[in-house]
Image 1 (cartoon, each protein chain N blue to C red):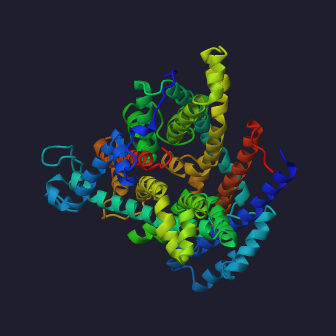
Image 2: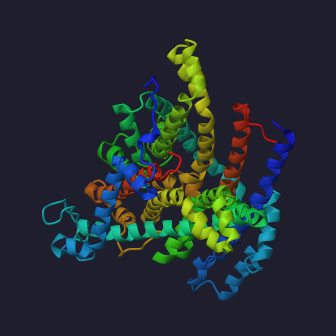
Image 3: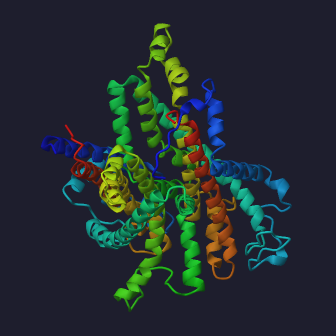
Length: 294
Length: 317
């Protein structure tokens, strides 16, 4: 490791497109591919949950009422104390968790991109106002505020997404701003200006596509954060309410059976962990694949 | 270090905290519901009595006026009284800060002691099996839903093995050093997990950046021992960006303990926050959120200062 090796970049074909290069780099990142496959499997399982499982998430087997049953061939991950099939409930939970994670991250990205783009492109007082506002929001302890808001508003699913996404845009805003600052004086922006391109055209057609790499990466990583946040809120009874199952509120119910039926609490958490892990691997792989400096 | 920079940097925190307090105050007070809601369905409390209560708490005033009054009092150190318990907020908050600092401090030190050696080791053994294992495990740590980990470890160590207590600060009637230590192990370790993982990765990459630099080659070329190169020339320089990340996370420990404290029934600020939430205890909620915010702002400030102290290349104008 101590002997430096010389690397010649010329071995790469120069006319390779951005996408082809990204795909080639991405394929070197084994863990990221693992993550992508896992997420696709989970996503499909969530979409086709009613087809995959012959049970419904709230269907009760009256013969199994009272105590949780252990995993068996009829009920792959056992049943809860109300005789509901745990595997089915986790599959349906995946729908909510993935949906909330994805849409919160998209909202955060949308807000962050908008604020960062405006600040970075217009500069001057627009930049000052927006960035001071970002500084202020960054100085708020976000987790307690999210918990308090969820507790006060008892949010519906869309509102929950708005709360999580609406308090997670600051990193993206700073990122997009710095990208815009460094790109707004480039020649192609000047050229577009000279040709009479409108400000919004320059911002979103010319500058934004060049900043897309870091934005994609931060969105991906935000999905993981949002999934953990949603499940934590639901675990404390502040997020998605039963009977709608989510990975978080499945854990709430099962924590009473830690002694007698620990698998009930183990599986939903394991799904959260695997999903967030896959998202983080994917994000890491995308960072490698989309970094223009490499 | 430039003194005028320091003053300017310190003065900026004032409008910042004003902005924070404005947002927090309005968000909390505009959310539907209020502290008097608990009596709303109580037949023995007449509507007139309810109005009286509201007037007493100042909740009948226009919100901007309430904010200005709150701000003026808060700045003078008069944090008011808890609506729920009637206790002075400042006293209650101070009482609860101690267990939180105890828990957060322990987990901070624990994370530091593990993350730095792990990161260095992983960087020195780059691309080895150990490095891959470390990278994988740190990804696990970063992706871990800590409330679930807490649940699982409680199930294992408290319920099944019965080695450790499952919750609380101490056993009632005991409270000795060993007893407190046993209560501390689970929550402190769980609070440390994410930090160990992310700091460890950061130390690793910072170390790798530095080890690739020219002055490290120079140090080797002039015949210094590998040990000296690694620690004197490598680690000390790699530490500079690490300090920023770690310092910023310290404030996060204060507010991030909400979840851990709730699960382990730890009587700190986090749990006080949850308790205050249920009764819409505005004075307590505002005080706790402001403490969290002040901690964030000041660690930020402190990090800037420390940064310029440990890295002579950085000069603020």
